[in-house]
Image (cartoon, rainbow over all chains, first blue to last red; front, side, top):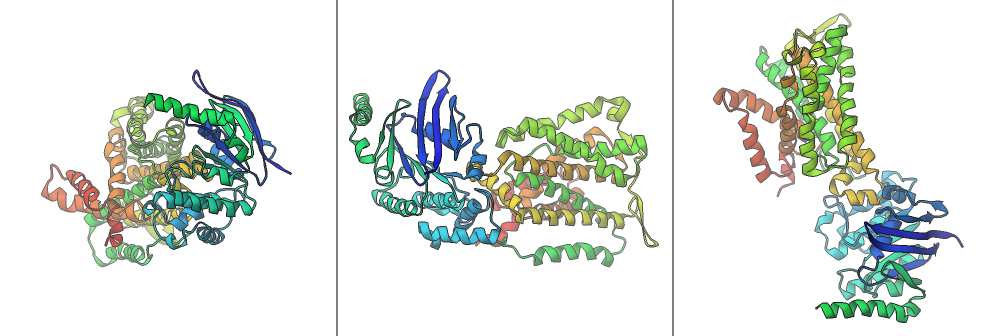
Length: 248
Length: 317
């Protein structure tokens, strides 16, 4: 088995505030890892460190054996890491098809010629179910459609690792189910995934393994069904809920 | 990539009309002069728009214009080089300032970039205004060499004094620049700039080198703008700091581009070719004191009624 991603002793401080402390884990090729934890646990910070949008205060990140700790995010993109955002980031004035083509035309090297990028983009719009919106400007899409579009664009970059940040946030249960099925289909094609989710309805069925964070540290990792019933994880979630209830 | 949604017939017909009218109308020296300047401003607007394609709105392009102007004027005055050499070489001064600009401003966006660029023009202006031994300071330089006489197989064209020849030179300049912009906008690089303009975060996520692509657009834009400055001073035969480091020269390309439309390659030229003659030939005789105010009115009306510029008219339903 090939190791896709290795994170070693990763830390992040914002001033005095330690947000992530000595996080270490590895991800095999073809595996799906869910990062869970209550709000403020450090999920998004860890995610942004992996994707390169934040620079770590300590520790290292390896991607297929290469140390990428200091690589800027665009270089990681060209190297085969694709990501989506909690708030979908699309090119609003471009059409849906052009948005996805951009992923293929840029993204992971080497880059295909335009005609090939267009064909790839059409295929991916079929996969995510946006083929009938091909000619619409991206700004006209709903939140769910923008998520799907962003996903298609990320896939168009032919990623070796796909990072999905809170892809289910703000969606209806029906939409989450639709995304879960889509993820299962993509997993079947051997995609390597890292997902974050603070609710568990998408990350549990999709992941092979969960990594639970609380206060910037890994408190448990293992198969989803084991982790969600782990007393430490329950305490972390309940602790937040209890604190919130007290404040409320 | 997808073909843009315009047909080339309109722009090609317009280019033909611009090439033919001086042959039909004789003794049209005023019109030749005004249309020639409109072509120069059209080139300036295209050059400005190259940087704007990346989402950057500059209010300081007069810095590049003025440095290109002085670069060429100084080479020509102190070394008596031909303007054929001094204009492209002098424009390197604009390019050099573009490099400094990029170092200083590459983190700035939107209004902050606009303000910084506005201030940036003052730096070369103050230096050239006070370096008397080199530039004659605020006196400026007069009697600069005019554009040369070209000889093509026994056929002579005096670019220095023949208004018709000058018009065709400037028309060729604007058409060549427009074709260049069209090629850029359809290229992979053009799409990278568009991606940066529409959503820089998304562009970076798919691997686009934001700083590098924007810097290239800036440097191309700076050099082309500086070339315009060089042509300008040798057409006039004189240069002085307030003439070329002039806020008006920073604002005009923005006004022409917004009026004509920034999303189509010919939009900025369209703006220049309509507004400049309108201002010079209609408003100046009518309102000699406040004719430049027409630009203010036009920009307000454009923003209200055609936020994408008039070249997007066809798209409105």
